[in-house]
Length: 147
Image (cartoon, rainbow, N blue to C red; front, side, top):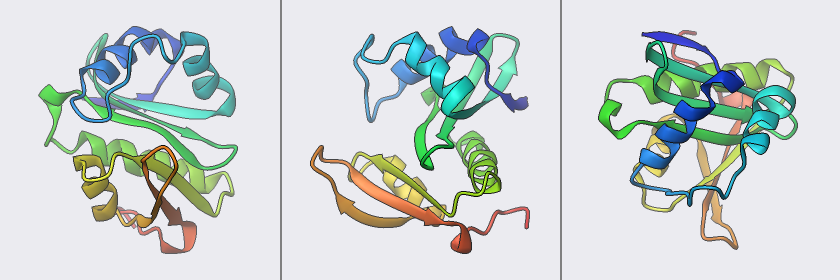
């Protein structure tokens, strides 16, 4: 297993994982490859857990402009092995290292993702106009597991 920075060469595997999830489903084609690449190369950074060459267990992408967690998904066949938490922690560490003091995200209320973020120390704010539970994490409250 290898935790590494994501690149555009990972595009097909990122989409495979994204469309495999059973919660917070996304209609194929709603987000373009160009938009994905912009988040990987211009707006922020992404990471993957690679199990073998060209086989990704999960990925995370954070937006360094505003601290939004743009994506964090694990292949359902690879859940429960700690990949999500590894991806989360490296992404959060990096985003705070850029100088951001607050991170934010939205997820489906009542989902396993909501419970994951609560366990990781995120604070629930409100349900937004799109029906997503909004969360925030402040740099002052971040306690990475390796600290």
